[in-house]
Amino acid sequence: MTNTETTFNTEFFDSKIENQPYLDPLTREVLEAWMEANDDSIEVIFQERDEWEKKKEFLEKPDEQSTNKHTILSLPTDLNLLEIPDVVDTLYKHVFRNNPELSTQGIKKFGKLAETFKKVGVYINENIGNMKEGKDIAEDLSKKFFNHGLSLESKITTKDQPVQPTVLSESDKRELDKWLIGKERYYKVMSRLGSNPSQEDINRERQRHFEGYFKALSRKGFQREWNEFSDPIAEIQKKIKRGIENTLSFDSDIYRAIFESGKKSMKEKIKRPRTIKLFLEMLHDVEGRELMIKHQKLYDYLEIPRLKEELTEVRSTGDIEKISKKEFEIATKIREEINTYEYEDFAMIPSEVVKDNYLQCLTSTLFGTSLLDELGIKYLYVAPPNHSMTFLLTSNGKLYWQDFTPEQFSKNGKEVTSDMFEENPNILALAENSDFFNIIEKQSQKKFSISNSADVMMSHLISNLGGILKGEKAIQLNKKSIEINPNDPELYNNLASSYDSLKRYEDALEAIKEGIKVDRNYVHFYENLAKVFRKLGRDEDVVKALEEGQKRDPNNSYWSKSLAPAYEKLGRYEDARTARIDAFIIDTFINESTD
Image 1 (cartoon, rainbow, N blue to C red):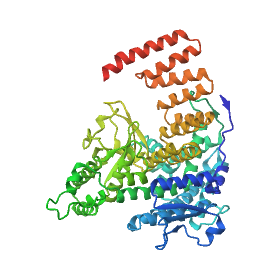
Image 2: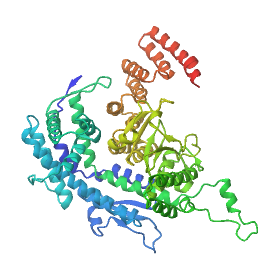
Image 3: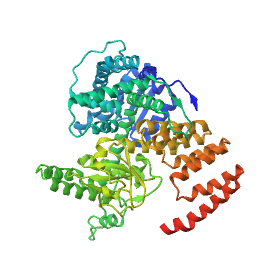
Image 4: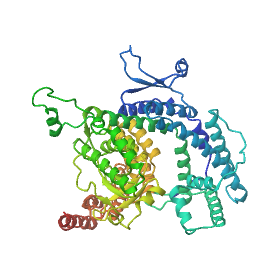
């Protein structure tokens, strides 16, 4: 255990704001690859500021006379944080040019964020007087948040304006509490006050949290080894710093806008699969007047605009059960059509899927949900181990198994109830109060990660692209996926694997350590740890990592089989013999009996 200076330092705030991410050639190449993977009708081009200033336009539509039919996203290499909202706004207006209600969502988000930054500054400033520790940190953060809110509004860097007193409503304060400490933590705190707390109780709890929050930021913590419990002070500081940095990572919103472009391209361009049913339709006219019909896009075949009109009409009745029945009927129709596509493991990139018409679990989920989005039908993102799917959410609050993956039919359409999972969780309440949570299915004992945010699917798509590109680009993409979705342990493991492939073993260890703080029970961490420790010649740690994995996954003979040679290397021959016997027992009696 090493003592480290972990008092909270706010200097990262300024460096993040002043960052110009695309000065780095690798960062530019990665963004170009992300655009090509999502929508290859748009091309990203970076120019020096002097050259870009001649047109000063972010988006250039193709000239009818030109042979190049790409729309050009033109960005200056020294693009700064305050210019990014305009880039995002331009992209959303292009992507949703036929949907005015969606075309302004990018700039609206930044407007709301500017207002939030100012209010956070005011809110912290209001509570400084009662603090005993961490006052200087609170004053600094209050001023930085407030000034950056002003900068976002005016698009001119502001640093030295004093925090202006503003009247915050109780509703404002509740939202700011959630923003500062996280929704999940906020609801836990409020639940302790009972079902109908007085305003006095709420204010007292709020003040207690403010004092604890900044007291923690002013203390020193410790950096511990991966297999020891984390020091709470150091972890609180890291979590808060990471949360603020992620909020200030506006270039992630460029990734989000490009992701929306990719989903739209899939929705509007993917053709129906070449099935026997389609072949018969193509030969429908035996008299030869019309031997073939056009190979339709699925969007057109399903007549999505007509389905939208039907659903709008039913919704106008206000009859919840009738509306829910129609939502289920339409969602089932879409899902059944997507289930008929051919499955291909490597169909991981939207632009390639559009060309080839093959799908895998993630791309089929993106395709299906893009159609549901247009219809206003709701769902939750669901990730069982090594898989992507959804739960359909109808207006009457019921959930249904909805897996768009080709050839996945077993549970589709079945109602999802709390008694299917350990501890009978209220899934909808969890989804409302948390951006990302896990539940365990009773039958399979598999962990299901669930979210109501499209960021989860996007983060997996980014990580998949990293797996395709490899090397330094993979590292950049996996870091971006974590920035967008920091609660998913799989993404940290993917980052560790990227470092490992470049023999950057210490970086791989650090990625796994960070992931273990997110989920200590994600068993793949310990498999990866053992591999990295083995390459570093840390034989004692190899054994510790494998033993940790075995504790969490005791019915998997992999751990015993791996431990046997690891024990032998340390001269622990009796332990090695026991491990081999354990592996034999698991394979012969336990796993065989569950097949």
